[in-house]
Amino acid sequence: MYSVQPLDVAVSVLALVAAAYLRSKKSTALPPGPSGWPVIGSLFDMPTSRPWKVYQQWGERYGGMLSFTVLGQRFVIINDPDTAVAMLDKKGNLYADRPELPMANMSGWDRALSQLHYNQRFKDYRKLISRVVGTRKSMERFYPAEEHQSSMLLKRILSHPKKIEEACRKTAGAVVLQIAYGYRVKEDGIDPLVDLADKSLAQFSDLTTPGKWIVDLLPSMRHLPRWFPFVTFHKVAEEFTKGCDDLAEVPYNFVKQQMDQGIDEPSYVSDLLKSEEISDEHLFNIKWSAASFYGGGSDTTVSIIYAYFLACCLHPEFQTKIQAEIDSVIGRDRLPSYDDRESLPYAEAVCKELFRWIPIVPLAVPHRAVEDDIHDGYLIPKGTLVIANVWKFLHDANLYKDPFAFNPDRFMGPNPERDPTDFCFGFGRRVCPGLHLADASVWINVVKAAAAFDITKALDAQGRPIPVFAESTDGVITRPLPFDCDVKPRHEKVIQMVELATIAGAH
Image 1 (cartoon, helix red, strand yellow):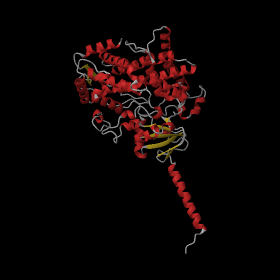
Image 2: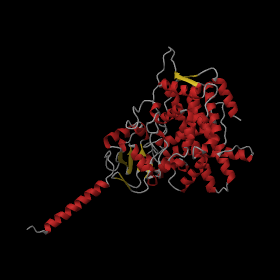
Image 3: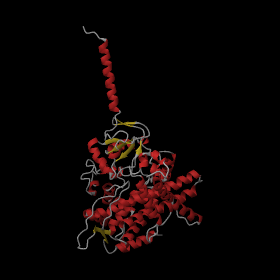
Image 4: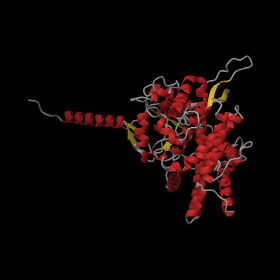
């Protein structure tokens, strides 16, 4: 008869403890990724150009969620769209914070919405912006301004058909400036406030480029004196602070001056200044939420509208199709309006494909874990920076057939592919509060350009088409690389229709 011996008990207990330990280790393991070196981690593996493509390649080796450290900072890159939604949307309260970016903060950008920590000021900004453009319904009162500026885009291109990107920039800036500040852009030359936004946001993109600034990797270096050898970031931060300050102060001062003279137009800022008791704190929030609105809205839609002209050069068959839909629904006696939107499903599909094809923000701005989390059996430690690889999501062959082709038909019919706007406006508590403005702006500009123009590749001196490529700039916010194209009115009524629309919309 078998009897239990003390040694047997000890072995059994040790086995149970070992199994529990292994289960614990397995359940709290960090996501896989490059192992890196002691102290510096994966510092020398960090991509310096087009990181979204590098992270896609890493994902092929390590999976849909990978991690690495750089100088003690843990990063998690999400290459799987369902994981991004499960973490950043469904558990948004755990990932609502932003990282410390010392270089951007030293340059004043910690006052802007995109860089705020998840705190009361962040909530106040979003509440103010959402009151103005928080829903598609709330956007309707700005449709006249949008329609006027989309007609002005056509007029600007007819006047200077070789300056399409400049026309797109001015149009995007004009819409946001009118809504936010009641400011109407100057048509002759470069408008000073549009130019201010362009320069300030170019600086912001530079300041937030991962790995570019040593002070972001070693935050304690910000305390080094300006005279310290090879320390240049203090000087750059001081220069860039002026651009950041001007982004908020210059248009705000314009509104105040107009209000003092009694000639201000209805706008985000003037309405808020008139309607409430203004404490210093509330004034700060109005000023900087408006600047965040102005900065974000004047830059992002430029890329999508400009990409429409590129797509027409590369894929003329879709241009023919959208024009046929517009002609069949609207005819050629007027330009499209928002009232036509429900009747133009192919135009809607074209806009979705533009958002997907060359995404504005290929890597979502980093989220920061506010406490430890276990996701899919992996530990995400508090303080981890979580970055969604939006470019990968929008070029995932599991979601989009032939993902590098421009094909609006993928969104037509009873079984459309995944709506790209699920990903390209951010996630969770940090989703872009101006997404309805961007959606409305892109749609009206694209359908009016389709109704008015035939867009083809430009020809060289020998009459041969000049090649164009579906490539984008590098950086936090991207747009198609400059290209040449030929833009002509579709028919003899276009110039007259544009002239009438711009006159009517100006009043």
